[in-house]
Image (cartoon, rainbow, N blue to C red; front, side, top):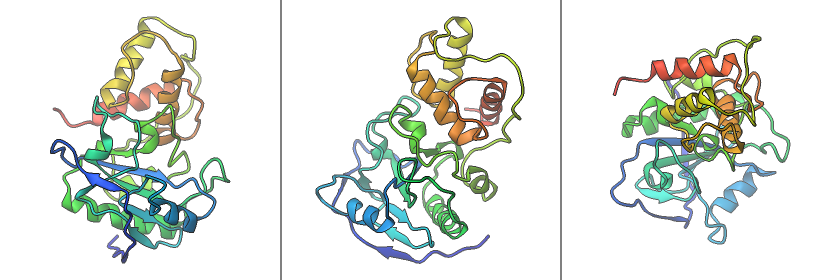
Length: 248
């Protein structure tokens, strides 16, 4: 698919210098989570909000550039991935207009996703961002965020060469691990999620932090059932993703 995206400039004052020479190696996708896309555009450009992203994609496919890619936009917040915590300094953030879970979460229109794919391809042509570092906001901040959510078409992006994905293991009966569980099996599960990049403490307890990470993982990689419980489908999907990572 060879799409061209016309980008409209709408500068936001909310940006700064990338810190400590961090490389741009994360592409971070959000939804706006606001009742109107015009309201989201205005908020991202309002100096009182202290938030911004590099780009915003409207439902009709209009794309707005808010912050130059060389600058540090304010979109990730308190977050971590692979032990790194200043995600804003090493990422490009794209906001995708959608009311989100609070205001009537709905599927993303084809025109919007077509424009997003073209935009992502354009960004990836300039920055050597590994597929496994094309992430959801919920991946890097699972205790706080759930965007872009379980309706976001990650598999469609992956088919266009964007992001890291595997066919999710089908749902089926089997052992499960849920909040309150603890022991060696839970410790191994936590370690597997950490291996992929999720921020988890090194212990053997299935706690609220673990529930949030599992929920974020399911939203991104196994959206057929999002419940924060590790079942066979979740575990095997995680194993497939880890096996598909390039050898370091």
